[in-house]
Amino acid sequence: MILLQPGGENSIVLVPGANADWPEGWETTLLPAVAKADVVLLQREVPDAVNTAVARHAKVKTHSHPCRRRRTRREWGSIAPA
Image 1 (tube, rainbow, N blue to C red):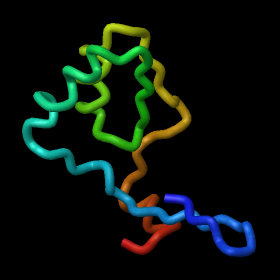
Image 2 (cartoon, rainbow, N blue to C red):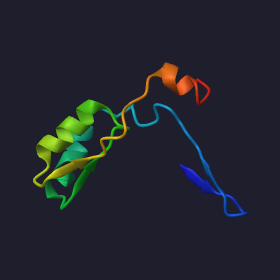
Image 3 (tube, rainbow, N blue to C red):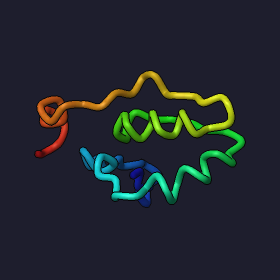
């Protein structure tokens, strides 16, 4: 999340692991929408299994942001409290 401060500066709020917990049955709800999408952009902030399922159901070319990768708790500990 990026917050805009009154003076125009921004503050980036980091919540490690926030996108790692996906509810049971998400495939039933979300994959039909993926199949109808004109564009699919994958990101490394969600579990690999989610990206894999989305890529398999997409009817269009998928794009992934290769610069991102999931950081370990040890790596996050150096920039954010555990």
